[in-house]
Image 1 (tube, helix red, strand yellow):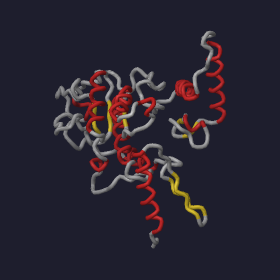
Image 2 (spheres, one colour; image 1 turned 90 degrees about the horizontal axis):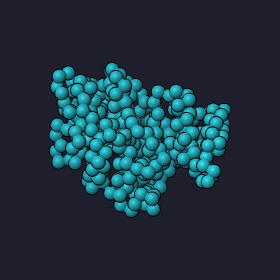
Image 3 (cartoon, helix red, strand yellow; image 1 turned 30 degrees about the vertical axis):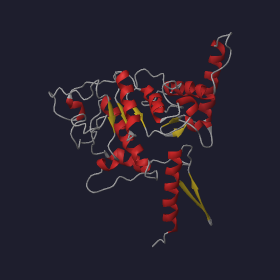
Image 4 (cartoon, one colour; image 1 turned 90 degrees about the vertical axis):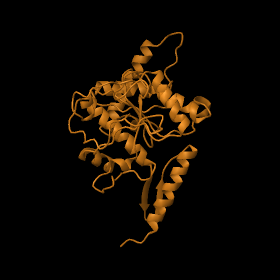
Length: 303
């Protein structure tokens, strides 16, 4: 992931923690020396900063034998250096925004085309609520890549024998329901990250986590709460993914998530610091909404 806040080691994490200085130094020089030994003498340049760290991250994950790697693209998707994984377990696209227009294009549709470049044949894909045209572009990109996955209905927790085609070449991409749809027993899901915009990220994370567990053949994934996806498009260009009852581990994961420097409040004596970062119009607006609410809550008298 990128960028880092304090140290470059934050970009490569195992079990949620940045790798140690010793591991970083060990694998940095292993990768650097190997690339130096094998580089083309005619084109003698080494990989650029982010590309080098991407190669190093893959090497770390392989050598440390991680069970699961969550890989975030650097810029866009289609031509990003992280986009070399031929068969990921699942792909996700979060909320789109205007960014890096000199590379990705100056419209949401062009940016959606780039983002959809991470889709792979036979791999389930999820996204959150998007404007209509960019969502249609994502759908078309998924169709181009033939992102189709046909499985027995039991994989979604329904009895065997249904022979259901949950993803067809016409509807290869899922739209994540809002987080409210996952809340049961009149209890709201608590998020460790503040800000209403984090709720769509949490809904996407739940779908990605459940799909990974499902494709690994794990049990106890959470009971389905709605009809199977694709049953009713209701005018949407992309079918809704199923909602389910999050497991206790999922609920705890959402509650305990922390991201230093993002929607973080730091009281220091008489001064309270509000830390966040944003570099697109939509993300700046989300940052402002969070700050207003956080400052308002801070000013409220405590009983």
